[in-house]
Image (cartoon, rainbow, N blue to C red; front, side, top):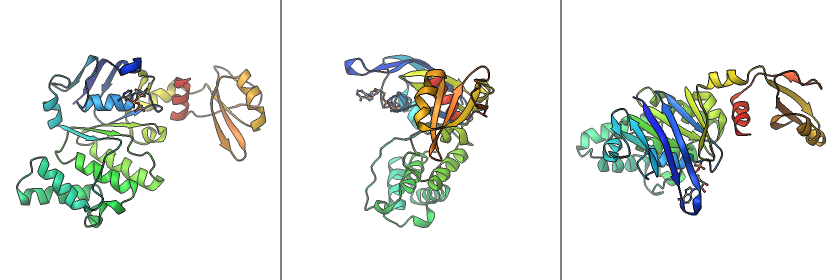
Length: 287
Ligand code: ADP
């Protein structure tokens, strides 16, 4: 099933334009929505999750008109918001059981089976009896995903799930989302470029409420291939290089600065051509 977003706009009071004519086509797989803080990602996620209405625009998920048939969308939706509360003294299995009851799984045996399957899927079966107050950030997120999966959603929206996770937990979470994408369309909002590089088949970059670019990561990389040049320089020299070159990114590297510049031809000056990564695409588009 495809999600089609057409000309979506939303302003908050005081004229802040959070979404400005956003159109996106989201095919099956994991779709990465990248953008800096304030880009409008959460506004878009909440709109897709039917938690708020836009000022204008249309959204369709398959045959469902998301904006006019929100209750139909909710039946096939799983949503993990950026912040969610869990009762710290409750145990993982109890929480899942509670939400499964709310979701209408009232037959005890069926519910127990579903809760067990979900805990196993998100790798929390071993800790099902532990209080969630003692859970790590990654364990909390995986429990959040289990809750979002109770109704076997066709569309799963996860808002910044990897923020603050250590690398091992981040990988676990990304593996889990990849697995889920076999059954559901997954939209992953993030400001971490590597999340998108690692698991997304399609992506878009949002900035200031507008879609800056959308497509397949590999195709977007191809657009800048051959035009990226790098050089390691002393930090003091950075301003001079900035004045002479189209600087895309700077990274600290062994006490120096690794500079990436964009240029159709060899800028000389000791630069060597480099393979672009998604971060280059991201910064190139956000300049
Ligand atoms: P992101 O998730 O990419 O950080 P948001 O959708 O949270 O972006 O925010 C987009 C813009 O809309 C920002 O300028 C933010 O300050 C503003 N904004 C978001 N939510 C509200 C709100 N409830 N009221 C007023 N302004 C908001």
